[in-house]
Image: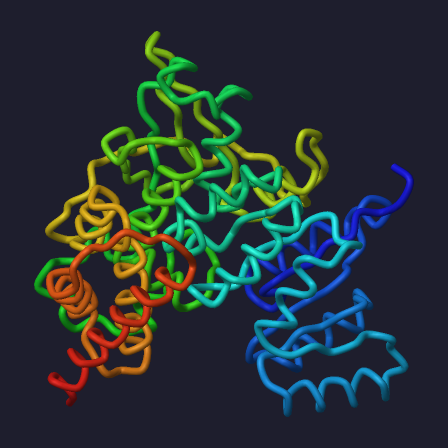
Length: 396
């Protein structure tokens, strides 16, 4: 390798970003940080800049940029601070960049991730909303640019590892019968149904196996996260919704499985640590040390599986319906969920009302074809407006 690969980390202060930087730091001869972005944790972003000395840092607002730039200058660091979506797109598509970790949560990550795709970068995709919102357009851009798209979600990375190399020819062509997408079941898998109406945001964020941000943790509790992953899997692996089956696996040791027509089922196992899929994608097609401890099967001792209960997890049902409807339905599903989860975390709605808001939005707004990115964001905006109307009607 003539020089270290230049890596842009979008969403550097989140759990995925920090895990990515941990892996990068273990291999300074292979990787170098080109740019970092942060949203609200600006003191943490400053500390990351001190440690990794990127060429650029990106923050959402001009005032924050001025403050961070002053701090970096006072520390004697050469890092330049850029602002907003334009800055994100710039560091994602910069000619010097070899790979982009797309780890911005939610719809805000779509444009910069697409900018990286259009520039032909190696994309480490942790922002599932990019595919959920604009799957057909996104995959068309990948094919056109020749960008390498590697999934970071532990489930999709597991599927990727269990697929034959030529899976792009189509599942039936490579002998794949179905994809088994595992889910932990989250913190409420066995909570009495009568208690779900009163669970708190802190309870919803207390994931039994994974350490994640609050929004993703709530999505895991409701299993909307798994619903979004189902939609993402359909685009990544050219699968129909009927070919993707969700399986609750509480130990989170088997990260997903691929079922072949000859009866073989291949699974990828490992400790629940995001550094494994990150290292896999960073080094692909090679393997590097991730810092993750070896899996101790004797300590795990047992592996359990169960079917998800859609009465307990209505968000999973809504996501599958959106996947089957296609076009604008997944984008509306995602937008309504973002509004509903934010309201739940703010104490404005109860946990069970998250699904109620999403279901109403999907029932009120017709599904339309998405010809371009403007149409994607129009559908997103309409769904958000309807979700906000629900909140106003039910304001406590």
